[in-house]
Length: 259
Image (tube, rainbow, N blue to C red; front, side, top):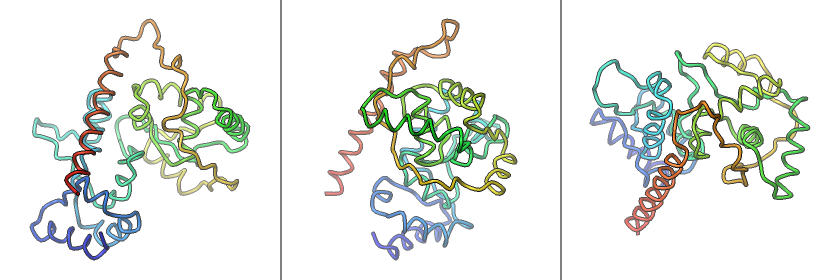
């Protein structure tokens, strides 16, 4: 899809006064450059429906972090949620490993991290050790995974939990431990996050480019405390596998349709 045809697509919805439908086919046909151009032209005036992949994520969030979901989407009544957002988020949802960033909740504490949240001096030996384990194909802990994912791109604990098939509480504990060890800063409010992003300088060392998703993870890190009964791990992983299989079937179906 060219930029001109993408603009025509967006304009067709704007002329009808409707949010733009962001289909899987549309996402697959545009580049990050087109997404940025559409954002610049339409972000201030145009709404879009979140794509199916993001609706699935927020359906999962509604079950495993209902307070966070309510912070984002609750309207105070029982009306169906339409999941409409500004078109300025198109570039974010184009990245299926990140998607809609949970960085603007106002009731629940923010657990959103960027490299500005990382204490550079303390983290450098950790990154060196983690990358050495990656090169040796050794198992990685969730602590390792979280640091690598933050290094790859900004991310929140809820997206991390979704990507790695666990619950938000697991990655919240990982984050809290990293904060206690003075490896990460926590910015629990929008105001504190804004101050960090505006006033702090990014790290000046070379960026470590690594996608931790799908790395070799030690299964022992998913063990729950004896007094924790928030979810059934076997049931959760069965459901996750079923969802992934369904996503794969949908993707194959979309590919066949496009042919």
